[in-house]
Image (cartoon, rainbow over all chains, first blue to last red; front, top):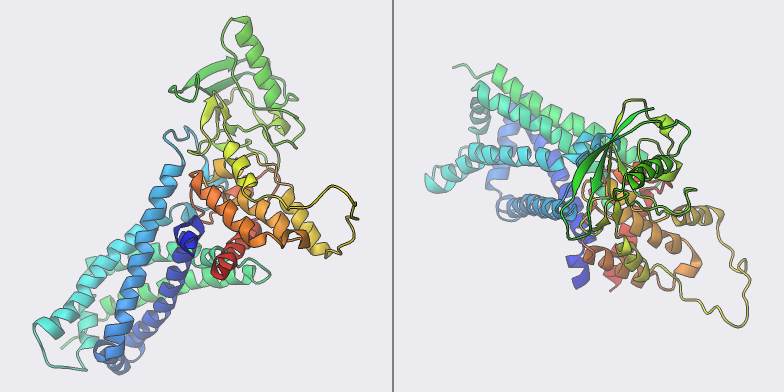
Length: 223
Length: 248
């Protein structure tokens, strides 16, 4: 077991499993977000439940944060080790595009943009929530979420930054989602189907996120 | 045809190397790439200069000795061949060709274009075999029935010639395709089952010790492999390793 934890293959398993976990989280996130377009009342109800349910707040939320941290820390560790493995002298000419896709070769960069976005996203929503609940100690208000969310997308700069991050998220998922199955040892007759599903997911989910951000920017609440 | 060559020259492992420019005239299109280098070396020797060292042996595409990074691709621009099977008709008059050794921390340069690939030998020695008593009573090789599909997959994995193009192509200098091919050729056969768990653990441990990078599933190794070794082998190694480790 100790050998497993130190091996290059274990690092692959950790990247794959934490990635798949985050993919599942994205499904939950995009579903609730879509409610903000389709049914503001349900969105308020779901957001309030997520914000005040102790199971979500004190068990699921820390697990999610741990999943994000494990994924990006391992990503940095792998990148550092892989750069070292090339040796002190690199190629004068290296034609990476001849044998591998751009997205697969640049996961570190798409990942870094998504990570930077998570910083902004946490500042916008998570820190705001923590301040509202625990610092300012405001009373529970199950009707506030929809209006707060729509208001967040009023500035064009924030909407643009979010959409850029979703494009990079799409590129990251384009390689990463199907790749995690290969890492876990799954490459069989179902692989072409998994690849098609993963690519469809990589397009549809970020597109839905982007649509929601743009929709709220274009449809502000007028009093 | 006339070619402009940029070739890596390095005196020995400890010396600092550099790219050196050469112009070579009179190259014929039906020459192999290695013959072209032979012609250049004859010119260098005639001028009293040190010839360029490069690895080669069978020149039939089966030994895995030749190993050149040509214009940024292992074994050059064509698919499913080694450098010795690459011909100058794949290039045009006036072309500039950049020739470098495989670049990996685990493959130190010995001289010019020759690298030390003994890391592969050590991975193989760590478990790429089956323990069979070959003396005494001979056993019929066909006594154990093997499913055709398994036999074919095992044979396909066993066609790996250990040239190192997978490592050279991989942006991470990972040796997973090589190691996976060597694990798979035994994992797919009943004769390989006895030592299967130890084999995959020992070979992966040695691969890590040699300082190769981690696989990020870009698939570059599969594209550049002169023998077309499939990524399926890496997935097989991943599950063999996971199940061996969990069983303890």
